[in-house]
Amino acid sequence: MRIDLSNATASQLSNELNSKPVTAQNAAQSGGVNGEDHATLTSDSTSVGSLVSAALNSPEVRQGTVNSLRQTISSGKYAIDPASIAASMVGESA
Image (cartoon, rainbow, N blue to C red; front, side, top):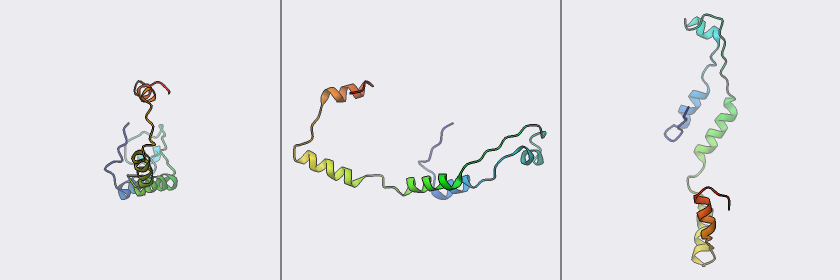
């Protein structure tokens, strides 16, 4: 199962989180299950909703980190370790 939140809005996610749990009784009323099967899908919509809200409200660019890296690079203090970069590219820990 793939979840793609890149194009979803907060209201769409909120509506999905507040959906009614599915039970055998609800499904049987709609004619889908014979009453013997039982499935309950639940989520803690409050915690999931707050995580979604925090993710959607966070900036895409961490400007403080960008500014710090710019300053380090411009001052010539940014050290590059080619061996570490190469090890990371092939999946080895450096």
